[in-house]
Image 1 (tube, one colour):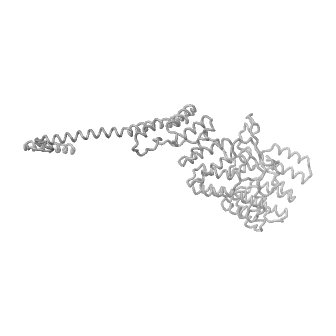
Image 2: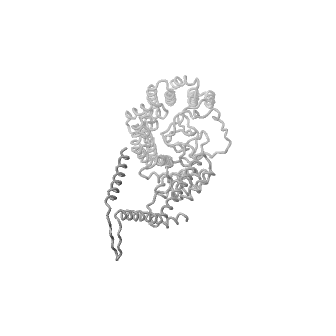
Image 3: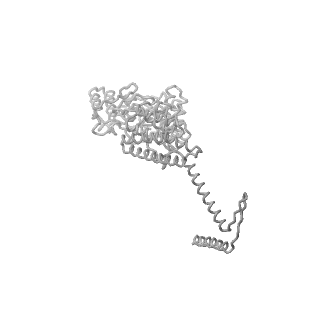
Length: 517
């Protein structure tokens, strides 16, 4: 309404001005170069207005002609950007649907239209991966890694390609390069941590764990557990180097972080016992025993006082077993100590309830008891025969590997804290417990000096132990625990993947010619 009123007001004012001029005619005389022009004021005003309008029209035409190269260049560039966007988007859709031929076609079209755009490089790399052209994919990832805007994406692609060809050293190097960034991506931080653990670089793994925790990649509880495992690994290493003081300090720190971690508690108890600090060692072992009764804890508890007799060790083990009444590990620990002390009645009493449905360790203890107490080799051989067919006892198990002693990482995947104390065949399906239906050849698992399982009584300090493969190990890089993705995970596609707008140049014809090169 206000605009209508203003419009009528302006029209009225113009009409009033025209009437006013018409009612007051006047003459205008112009003399220039002996030329005399006489006209009325109204005619002069109309002539001036016509000349001004004609000048505006002429200037507009000249300006349009001068700017036509820039306008045409901008139009063609915009059209190329739209075509490039369609090629990239359709190519990514083809990759997601698994159409390698269409992905390759759209990648070639995008490379022709916008060869240096980040999304074009990504499309080309993923199309090459999908079609199995590893060489082209790796070459494209190298080109991406050389640019600042796509460096991390290129390193991620190179890392995955290194995993595919089982090149652990190259994969670790690419992850290390990506992790140097102030804002290291999650995959790089975790990959570097796992690679250092698999390589036994405990100091480097601890440093990376700290950074991962500060970056939010690892929760507080997981951080405490993983740090305790790494400290235990370092303590075992120091203990093997006869550095008892350093090993004891590291083991105690690990116990403070994870009091129920059996290897840390057993090692700390043994080292404190050697240092004549039996009371503190007893507290540590008892706390871990109440949470996780384990033969290593019982052995460490029985040797808290160096030089103690076999009967004194039996008394200590009986006191430890009373803290978890009815526990099988406690009964077998008492039986083992009783046999060492030649208290056969005690051993038979604690083994009697377990011998009804004995496990392998119980059957072996019964065989030893029959031979030591009565010298009855026949009964001993009968129990050993039952041990062959008896159910399995818990053991340190990780990724189908059974080890006599705890190890910090899995020898198959390199995963930290992989070993668990459990039945080795508990996770196997009933159909393939003893028979492997897959007849295809498999790569053998390389393990250090395989040896037979030790008898339960042959305990020893915690150290790196040989392992026995329970099932064929998977192929692949030691680091990877799962299946490698076929392509680098797709990133969200922006609304306009075309080139960034450039400031207009005065040389419009030169830019226009550049579009047709």
